[in-house]
Amino acid sequence: MPYTTITGIGHYVPKNVVTNQDLTAVMETSDAWIRERTGIEERRYIDRTKETTTSLAVEASLRAIADAGIDKEEIDFIVFATLSPDYYFPGSGVLLQRELGISGTEIAALDIRAQCSGFIYGLSTADQFIKSGMYKKILLVGAEVHSVGLDFTTRGRNVSVIFGDGAGAVILEATEDKDQAVLSTVMHSDGTYAEKLSYMYPGAHGGYFIEKYGLEGFDVEYDLENNQYGGVFWNQDMLDQARVYPHMEGQAVFKMAVRKFPEVIMEALTKAGLGIEDLNLLIPHQANLRINQFVANTMGLCDHQVYNNIMRYGNTTAASIPLALSEARDEGKVKKGDVVTLAAFGAGFTWAAAVLRWGK
Ligand code: ACO
Image 1 (tube, helix red, strand yellow):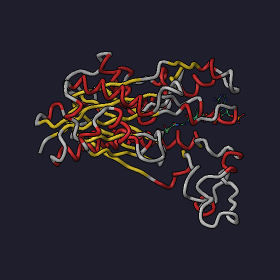
Image 2 (cartoon, protein in one colour):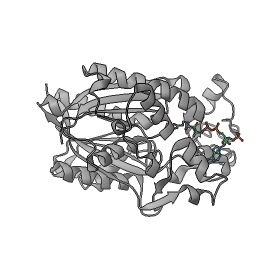
Image 3 (cartoon, protein in one colour):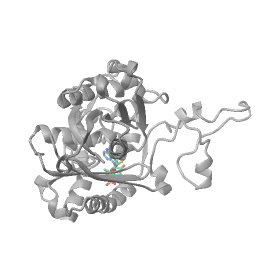
């Protein structure tokens, strides 16, 4: 049975840099608050009329394809992880296929909805397809455009200051060489906490879960009398109540993240037959520098064993791990044969990790 190896990697971020200071012009916040709580100094936002989630993915994909030295027509499967798709449907995978100019290949395109864990969920999925022999050259992308959907008023500041736009991509191919392969992947979720980090409107739930679980602060008015069948997916009250923005209970996310990161990292290392002493580089999801520092301290890892770039990009959700891995490679921080662990925790809650030996 073959193993999976990364043969190409690339990332792309929009040119527009937005500093913490820039955000003070539109909401009550400060550079000191954002830096202290999150480590973020600046993030990138798209040019709203010229760039999209898919266009960022295209740039990252073309770089990964060039890095792998393959033709884009050789790709036999696309896996696209995002929580900020250009369209509600169809998914981003087919848009990427079209924008890459490879629609004619008629290859399958799969969208992954696992938020911050999306890239590792995608890697695990792709790994199974390569091991089974079904696909040989898979394009896996994580891309996000958060900026266009955030609440840029003081009301939304706890969420808006954290997120940024960006994309990262890898080409995955089969190899017989275990010394440059994905050695393990693990995935978990617990839907108990679904609404703690969520974007619930528009949506088909019609308030059902809000009533069932007695959730506070999510309700909207539904005018069912004037709508014989529909009227719940979206309505004016969702806009009036400002429900069309992400919701995050930051402390609940923080507490669970610092518990689950070490667990899932150790689980993936153990599954790979390795221990923490074998780890050369940890690339954690870039949600909050303080979470990553806490995890590093708990696990006894030194600064040079953990790669962070959240200072420059904020939290780019499904893009954050390939973006960090690509930069780490470009900076020479990951070398052939190194044991690299990727780990993520986020909305769902979902969490996941992967261990690989770097082969490039
Ligand atoms: N600027 C200034 N003040 C702010 C801001 C801001 N941007 N945001 C919130 N505040 C205020 C609050 O209003 C509150 O004021 P009050 O005490 O007068 O009520 C005070 O700061 C403290 O707010 P908390 O929300 O309690 O702040 P906390 O210390 O929890 O930090 C943070 C918030 C940074 C969001 C933290 O909880 C966190 O990082 N949690 C993890 C979040 C995370 O990882 N999310 C993403 C993971 S999943 C994914 O990537 C999709």
